[in-house]
Every structure is written in structure tokens, then in C-alpha cells.
Image (cartoon, rainbow over all chains, first blue to last red; front, side, top):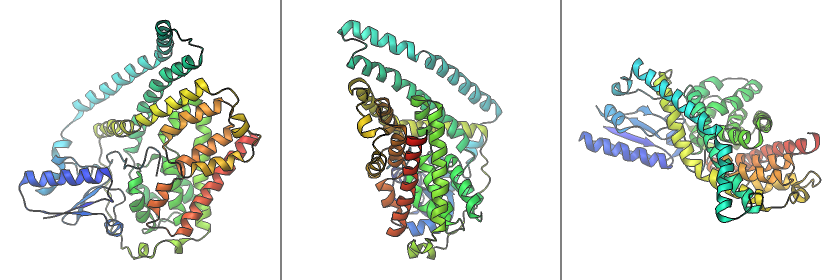
Length: 76
Length: 371
């Protein structure tokens, strides 16, 4: 599974990354988690508000820190 | 960009509760009734406390002066009264309005705003963009992706700028503080002139055909489109969104408000009447451009600057000068320019600052000489 956290590096982006890492650890699955800070790549996803989370190429959340529950749902 | 939106990223959680999990959809009508009842009870409590603030501040200062022996009319007394009354008043107003605006914002997302603006003609687009800037959740850390998302999907450059100028400048925090400290007239003046500047400055930038002053890579982006499902938010979600906005925004700006009011209280109590008149008054024509220039590198949000500005006004500064200073501090800032430098070439940044600065200057002079 491939998870990308998009965000230029504001506080909320770091929180989002932490939540995603925690959720992945809880779910006990193998996943590549990548933090994307490059504006060009972020824009390439068509994302207007950061932080955003992309799971297997699909944008799951925009402009907010997701709850761990939500992330766990996406991992199923 | 600024305002509530400050150096740190400040967007409250987004309205696009994209694909909510089943657990979260659970709360059904009974829970909505509970939420609405809760909100009504809180608003009632709010009114009750709010109406008691003035008597309480008077009582507090009298009691304090009895114990410590300073005069309530003296320097310290008037500073303390100002602080004890204004702080809770402004914080309470802020909480209420941030909640209300949060409810309104739950209907808007940047994606939806883009969909509305894409393909609009320039003049109408500028007007719409400035208006949407008020209600669309926006945060400084998202300025670049938002900018890219707009211009690469057919929103004209000038229209994008109208949005980017209006979003930080005309925001609920500025309007609440202005209303609370100056009354509704000045709040309305600020809001409408701010909107006009955003519309006109964006339109001018569009006329100047500055498209080639974007960084080249902007045009190489093949922006994927995130399909925007109609926000399926129910009312429980909206009310929660409002509470989260309060927690996020009030939690972030309360300290600026308190500090701003403290400085304002100091000016209120200690600075002699009319002192500001000589260098911030109507007769000093150079005070308007000076305020704009000083305001550009200064970076504060509305919350911190407005209480200070109120005290200045009281001591004889002219309204236009003060408005110009405030707008310049809030709408034009160095950190914003640095963020936007990633996508804009220096010429376009200079044009942006120049056009908005000129607009602010004009507002300053109009209010100093014609109002």
C-alpha cells in the first residue's frame, strides 16, 4: 500500500503524518508512507488545500488533519 | 497570508469531510436535537454573561481601587478598566462570530469555489472571487497549492488575485474586532473598501497581462482534478465544524487579542489626548503613505493590530491613516510575498504589492479628506 501525505511543511502537515504513521502501525500492515513537500507534485494531485492524504493514488482527505479512525478506514 | 491565517497553518478542519467513515455517519436526528439544544443553551449563556461585562468591569475597577488606592479616573485606572472590559468582550464576540462563520464555511470549500470561478469572465469573476474570499476556508500554508490549482484550471490570473487579496484581508476576525471596538460603521467601511480593493486590484493585475511572470514550471503542471462530491455534510457535522473552528481560531489568536488590548490599554491610559494628531492626523499628508510603508513588513493578524489601532484613533490619529495602516499590516506582508515567490516572478510580486498598496493609499486619502 502506498500512502502520500501532501503538505509544504506546516504544523498541520506534520500532525497528519503522525496520525497516518500511528494508524498504519495500529493496523499492522506494510505501507510506504511518503511525505510530499514539493509544490509541483502537490499541485499535480489537483489538491487545493493542504494537508492532504493520498492512498494508492486516490485523494482521501483535504485541508485537515484526519482522525485516526478515518485513516484506519482507508487502510482496509 | 495573514489574518487569522497566520504564519502557522490555520485552516480549520475542512468541510469536505471527504468520505466520512460509517462510524461518523451514525449520529442521527436525536443527536441533532441534542446538538441544537446545546448550541441554543450556549448562546443563551453567552448573552447573559455578555450583558454583565460592563457592570462587572466597573465593579472590578472600583474594588481594586479601594484596595490599592489608585484612582479609577487616573492613568492606571483607565488603562485597567479598558483592559478588564475590552478583553472578555472582544474574546466573546470573536467566539460567537467564528462559530457562525464556521457554520457558513461548512458550505464552501476551495474546490467548490474554484468550480464556481473557472471560466468566469474577468469583471464578474473579480467580483465573485472577492466575495467568495470571505466565506471560503483559506489558510496561508495553502496559498501556493490554491494559487496553482486556480490558474492551472482556467481561473484567470486577475480573478485568482482578487481571491488571494480578499481572503486574508476581509475576514471575520477583522470585522468582529472593528465592530466590537469601533462600532458597525467602521466595520462596514473596512469590509466594503477591502472588497473593492480586492476586486479592482485583481482586475488591474488581469489587465496588465502578467501571465508570463509566473514561474515556467507552473505551466508544466498537469493538474489532476479531484472530483468534488457535493459536501454531504449534515447539520451535526456543520455544528461540529463550527466548534472546531472556534477551537482552532480562537485557540490561536486569543493571545494576540490579549496582548493587543494590553498595548491598547496602555495607550488609552497613558498617551496624552491629541498626541497622535500631529503625526497621524489629517493635516499630515505624508502619514498615509508612511503608514502603508511601515505596515508592509509588519506582520500581525487583525487580532493583534486592531486594539492598538483603536487606541491610536482615540488619541487623535485620522481614520484614513489608521485604516491604511491596518490594511497594509493585514493584507500585505513579507512572509506572504516569500511564500508566493515560489510561483511568481519578482516583477509580478512587485506589481501585486504595488497595486494593492496603491489601493490602500487611495482608501486612506479618501477617508482622511472626504469623510
